[in-house]
Image (cartoon, rainbow, N blue to C red; front, side, top):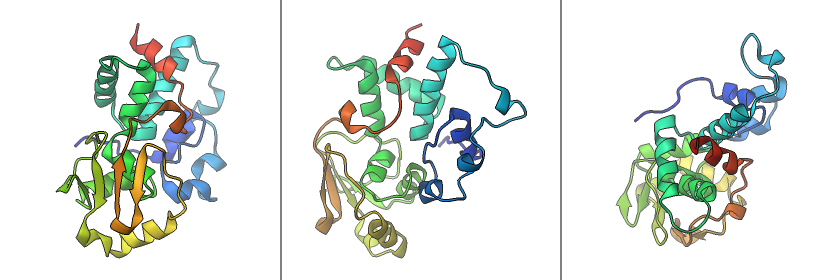
Length: 209
């Protein structure tokens, strides 16, 4: 299973904004971006204004890094988005990315970050429609029920995460039942429900060349 293994804080610095990839650490004084908001590398402080292509590339890279997706998989998601007959391609792309199991777990407040959600999924803490799933990229469909495995519900780590994120806002496309430790995807994610600073139109322009 391919994944990025480099320094996470360098990603935020390269994109010029916080992407909140490390959960609570991003809100505290230890955040590297708060101390060094310029791009990493020897010439990081001397970067010039980007070209049109550069802006499009940065939009794509930012979206990839928000969701922790590598290039080949991101390109695959874009191909899927172009095949959806309804809606705009860029918005459909974000909807597909939001439907990844690791992102759904994060949106539910069952993990402090997408990276942690990915790890918890791999460690088999969640089920989809009663079946244990350990693939972070699994695409949750409308009507699917996501639940915390019964054995995992009593684990200290899971309990602490749920307590810390009890007031975590839930997106409209997810219906949560806290008593049963489960949730249901009731709709395809709409653009207005995705609170990420991503210019999806630039991504579509990039892939349309």
